Image (cartoon, rainbow, N blue to C red):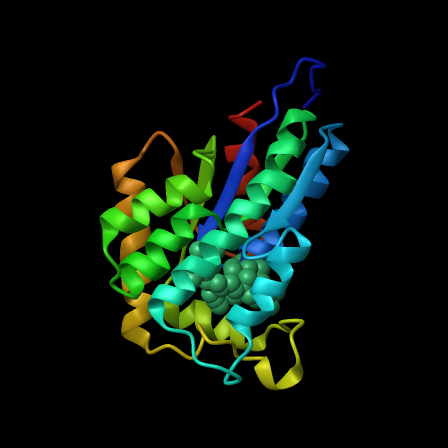
Length: 218
Ligand code: Z5A
């Protein structure tokens, strides 16, 4: 599809449980948008800035230290605040589309629904740490934890070898079921923003669904 010069940049987040295929599809979507002449920044949380990368190492490395639910929440929030200020807002201001692998909904799903932290507090911390930025569209990659965790186990994480299965992948099955339910609850509450992607499909089918959803934003 030919793009117009007056295209307004969009902020699109990719959410879902472990191994749902977000990272793979962000890469494909970014390539596809670039081929259409659309400037794109593909980024991820936690991460996306030097501070965010440090926080990511602290959060995801297995076994080296204990992190309680409250500290975990605040670390994700700190990474996000820096990410929005240093990376996301400048990219949008430069009229670049931003595709982000996880954002504030992940905090709701994992620390709120998953860890059971107070929903009202998580909501207000999310607004603070996002500098009130809300995605134009959120693609929720919905998949049973059974399939997702099996996929995630086969993937290379890029962390040190002994951390190949990170802190979140070690959680019990019920935790991952709560995450899935939490995401679906968030999607039901904001149907204008969320689109649910059937992530159990093969790579090409999912890629097609993602493209259809992005085209709706042109
Ligand atoms: N977290 C949190 O608790 N609170 C927060 O606020 C935030 C995050 C922001 C980040 O880890 C962790 O932080 C995350 C939530 C928590 N929990 N975990 N783990 P991460 O960034 O390292 O990982 P992730 O975000 O969960 O992504 P992932 O596990 O890497 O999965 P993915 O990105 O959704 O999937 P993928 O890497 O694209 O694919 C996984 C494998 O499946 C890979 O081998 C692919 O080749 C394969 N794949 C992909 N698509 C398909 C299809 N369609 N069919 C078959 N196989 C496929």
